[in-house]
Image (tube, rainbow, N blue to C red; front, side, top):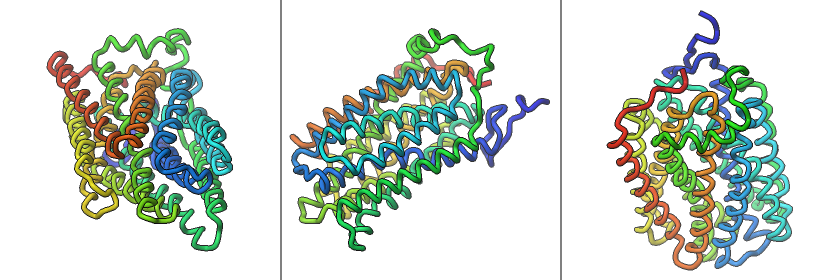
Length: 436
């Protein structure tokens, strides 16, 4: 048996043929750092809006939604080219380049003097997250054998959540720590952002060393560029891929709503209660971390069930949990009160469930030779979700209630759940794995 046919293992997880254990361990490191680096932008941005730019609280929801809007315009333009690039030159160079671009954006962010400059730096950041999140989702689909896909995705979700909690707690707490040591608020913001920028560059070097080179398909089996550009749309003939695109629309919107508006809700509430910006950002960060801690603890619970269930059934259950978690936030009065913690726990459970359900379905259905392109379209739908939900959500945050964006997402999750029930009844059998 040659190396291409051997299936290696990491603990209970079986890897796809030709994926070695050190590739898997490197990816797990990537899963730990990637989403933590990506989500820090909201925590750092809340600090910059208050400390650098002195934006009134009443305008911060709309401004945050606008910044996400421009981020998603960039991602809509570049997710498909990035996916095609991954199918042609490999995942590793795109992934590492993405982390370097994110590092550059964080190095520039604290030097913003106007909203225009902040928007430009946010668009540079967007180029980085196209590469990072696109490569993360594609490698996540490449590396596990199909029988271990749920467990592999659950471990990835656990590491995503752990990275969000640890990295955001450390870097999100740095401004407060530096301010306590005598640094000005502006200096504290600069040193915090430069620190996370350096961490992203070091992580890029680790990924370049340890990820698998090349593409899953042999050169002779690779589709031409025209086919790759069209494949994301052409595969919507598969109703399960189409359903997974719909799930991506809300699942990535879920993550963006939490990352954008949960820290902002806590921060603006803290400032309204008379806290200084550094302390208020820390309070906002803590409710975000509570939700992500719940997510990381829930991931290994739901993952084995996803392996056992029909993947569409799993998606339906996951979307039901997500809808319940988001809608429960309508019961919160003050987000900084101790009694609100249970609702943020439910929110985290729902958010990670929607991510795992959507990722497991597209992982099963995406064809190997066109995987980067199909995942690119999956991410395009996610970008549309983020663009619409956060743009509308930012205005609802300011004009109606900080709870409004979460209620909207809860309702959309319920609609995807109903679509999943339809697909499950109409197309009852799982497709054959595209991996082997």
